[in-house]
Length: 296
Image (cartoon, rainbow, N blue to C red; front, top):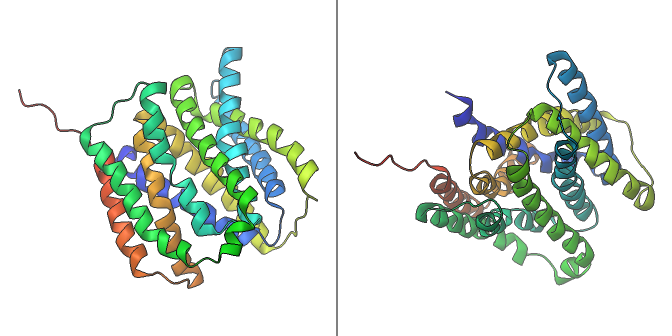
């Protein structure tokens, strides 16, 4: 089994654990401060690794800028926005729904930005992904009290901005970073994320953190499981194929989170979530399957 075959499933599994990590870390650390620690740690690990393997660094100032700026979009604004929004009242289900709208935005913009053209089955797959996601999540949203939504207006806007940022970052990565060593690119991305996030920590937070077992586990997994492996897989998927295909995998994240929450925390796994997950899987399959070779 090649890395190209297992990468999508492994990416979804790893990426979805970010929600589990957020649940562990939130009571013990301010979200942006925790993310700054994550960025610094990930960058340090990548620097050491790049030195050991003698990875090639970007050769031009433009390449350094593109790598750093893509990190601002993919990490600082996206992760920072989502974590801050959840910490300030956005329900997890609603945040997941907003984040999972990325594939639709990506598919809409990609033809104009990177010249992608979607086949009929890919368009159908993206549409099915949205339908499945709505089936899975809408019942939970309808159960929320109006006061919960009203109190989270600003955090909701931040969450939407975060979704737009990761879409822009994915397209930016596809357009400007198709060449170069992904290891050094990732290093510069975390540097850019830290530089942008750190001032907001000083302005908005008290740098609160309780160094206990939960925080150590959350930070370790955030660095090695998410910042290193999951991001490496995302960059690989973007480089290897259409950004619309890579983005469609985000549809699988909220249902996968629900399954993990059921296994780890005993949270309810309702029938709509199960049905919606099956529809999402079909949609992602249609979006990512390779077209048949023409008969000659």
